Image (cartoon, rainbow, N blue to C red; front, side):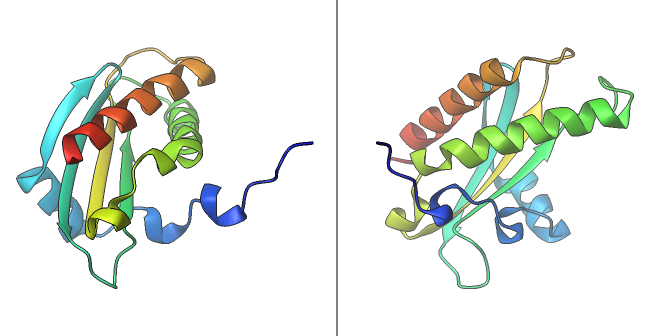
Amino acid sequence: MSVIPDNNDFSFKKTERLHHRNDIKELFEKGSSFYLYPFKVLYLTQKLTEKHSPQQILISVPKRKFKKAPDRNFIKRQIREAYRQNKSLIAPDLLNKNLRIAYIYTSDKKMPTLTLAKKLKKTLERLSQELK
């Protein structure tokens, strides 16, 4: 018999999405980055505040590499789902910090969902290492 996880563990709420223009600008100006194919990952940690969720992410798929919106949306959906399932690998609330992450998809080809999920999991593990 399997144990059903609590819904809060695997949810992805709107508060977890990075969408404020000033926050995004600050992430790109002050954030650190690393590259792990097929993602360029930018991240920024700040003091924990009540107005933001402890973790916020931004997902970007360039129009230059994927001309058709359905293709870009499909890849974003894959990344969002992989993040939702593996976000527990990082626990910034234990560090008393806000964490903003931007995933920029750099490949020019679509990947199978399982492969993409494995790659995203590796980025989260590396990010967790760099935060410690």
